[in-house]
Image 1 (cartoon, rainbow, N blue to C red):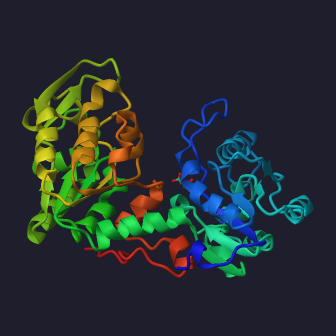
Image 2: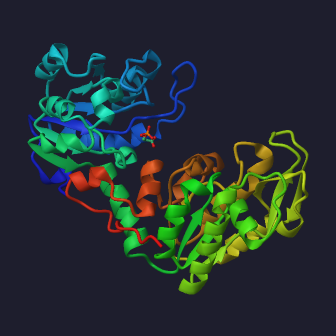
Image 3: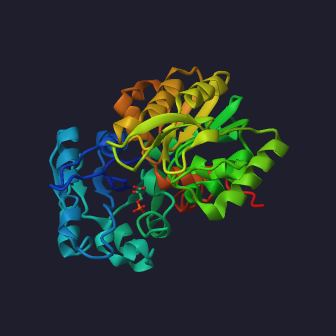
Length: 403
Ligand code: 3PG
């Protein structure tokens, strides 16, 4: 992979693919601008090097149609405020005569933002015509959109076939470097903490992680499937019956491989899925029939803290419980403190884990917080990321072993 700082940008039109797919409230106000802030070093670098900058992103899933609520307009305004520059917004047709005129009139040090790339059906179809049209706008393509690196889309993958030069930006660089430090060449012991609601979305990642880690810590509703696998009853909890045997295989495999696998020993249960539900703490052996597991319990938090104490690298994906409800947030917040207070190199990403960390206000004590959700998980799974492959690179962990 070549990086942006290895080439001359002066006077060039630089097309920066960013991931500004940020959360919006019902009035299209941005509720979290971390992804925009993460791209600032790359954008500012291009501006400082006297490039003419086009930035482009998708927003949501408009399915090839112009959906007003998914316009990039609020993002363009926020970016303008952060850069202290006006950011012009291109037309909803994305690449037409008006766009070309705007690019022609773009001065060095100025920024043009394209509208939502997914307004065009060719984007998600990786349509070469659309890739070609986007590439025709620029002299240099810069991919700084790690969070969408797992999608083989026109502005992510196809465009690299047509752009005169394709390089990676600083966000992409940082994501790859931290991931490599954690997973490819880690200081050991290396622990993976994996939580979240559904085991089905994580099993392949868990399987791949077993090949790399020394300790594996499981939490969140997905741990219920493992509890079932050990033979405990989980009452009315969410769990995935069809995956119970898979969880058993994983536990066996961990044992065979000498990986220490931890599952909860106690939990917070509720009489219904509701922030105002009645709750209590129980051991996993005594989960009442009519209740459901909502969080890991205090003994589990303590156990996980002890397990992570000697780790030199910790990678964390997915909350320990339904932390969006106060009554069930303790397990996740305890994990934030454990990870933040550890001396290990710590990386977190995906599945709202970053939200939990910022709520606890511990972001500064985490070595790296990934901008990726699905992309981060794909990397943990050992999938080839189309964006990285298109730039001629690799995550260093592709080629997962299945079996
Ligand atoms: C994300 O938020 O994970 C990325 O922007 C990708 O979005 P997608 O899942 O809609 O492709």
